[in-house]
Image 1 (cartoon, one colour):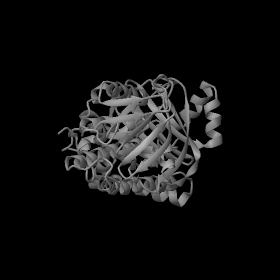
Image 2 (tube, one colour; image 1 turned 45 degrees about the vertical axis):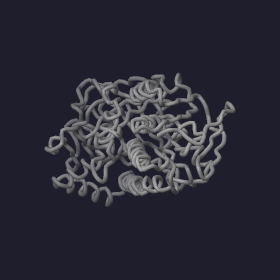
Image 3 (cartoon, helix red, strand yellow; image 1 turned 90 degrees about the vertical axis):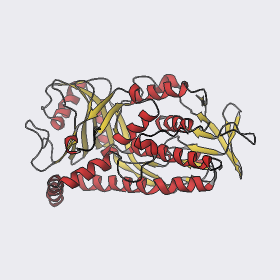
Image 4 (cartoon, rainbow, N blue to C red; image 1 turned 180 degrees about the vertical axis):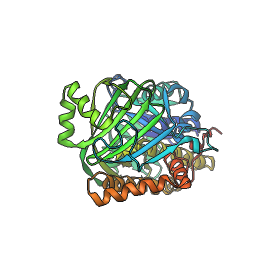
Amino acid sequence: MSNGRGFDADVILGGGGLVGQTLALALDQAGVSVAVIDASKPADTLAPTFDGRAFAIAFASFRMWRALGIGDQIDAQPIEQIMVTDGRLGDGVRKGGPSLLHLHFDRAEMRDHDEPLGLMCEARHVRLALDSAVKAKSSIRMIQPMSVTSIERDPAGVRVALANGETLRAPLLVGTDGRRSFVRQAVGIRTIGWDYPATAIVATIAHEEPHNAVAYEHFLPNGPFAILPLTGNRSNIVWAEPRKAADALLKMGEDDFLAELRLRFGDFLGELSLEGPRFGYPLSLQLAERMIDARVALAGDSAHGIHPLAGQGLNLGLKDCAALAECIADGVALGLDPGDVSILERYQRWRRFDNVSMALGMEFFDKLFSNDIRPLAVARRLGLGAVNAVGPARRFFMKYAGGGAGDLPKLLRGESLAA
């Protein structure tokens, strides 16, 4: 689409993180020119110590990265099996395997599916791959470090003022600037949500024995404890604890921390050691009341931030990217401009229900499992065992968690948006 009426780009993205850069690549593939404004310094965000997380990327989300040309640039560990258990400290992680009543997902059951259940990708690898891909596109203008100071809209477009005094104008502005989104607040979109009284401790662990591409999710009384396989004999842990306990664990010496970790991790992978620093991320739920406004759309954490217990947060943002890019591409092909209200309404219809239902689903599971109430413990263990005993139910959950259910945008099917 050519830029007319004094436009500097077809779409301006306020925020250039993982979701912003993925959306920029998707729009560029569709022939839509993009300007990305990001407040962070590349030297900070690309440093190995910036982000200790690893993401459980659904197979459908990874299809999109492949379709955008960056899949081969990410050092990813396939997940072949997922083991879900419930119990007290020591249950389900002791030597000998999981507790008797558990839920076991195995890729081998998906006979018509040649992809893993998901892929574990370290945040630093994803950031480097996206940054390199965006820089290689002359049609994507990356402006950083730079912040947006004000937003003005009229019937034809939106104008953003930057901290350096420059202004940019486009038919559409997309907020991809995270939970504290300036774009969302500037256009008056309110949020609903609450803080959880918990912090997620994230660290990478080296272990003696191979993980065999198995991911573990243990629901303990204080919150979920996940062991997620990385390349080599390494795993990423995501360990939720009440805020004060988490603060103490993060400040502990390495030996004391590893002693506490072993109570939950067990010895099935042999000796453990820390690889790199520990990180703490306070948990909260946040949902924007709507995903669109006049000449504005929200994607990723600016629209929804959920509990990480199933690793779906980034995947929801990547689904937003795929859906919004396709809506814009289809609308432009019909002669509409990217900010046309019909394009934005289609995008919101496509993504709103999935985002809200996933957020509420994670809230339900957190409340159901993160307690030590005896009747609930018995019921949920029986529930895990019952689902595990029904093959079609297991296969449905595997497909849903992998992003393969529902009306999928082209990119999530692995198809290009190029004309």
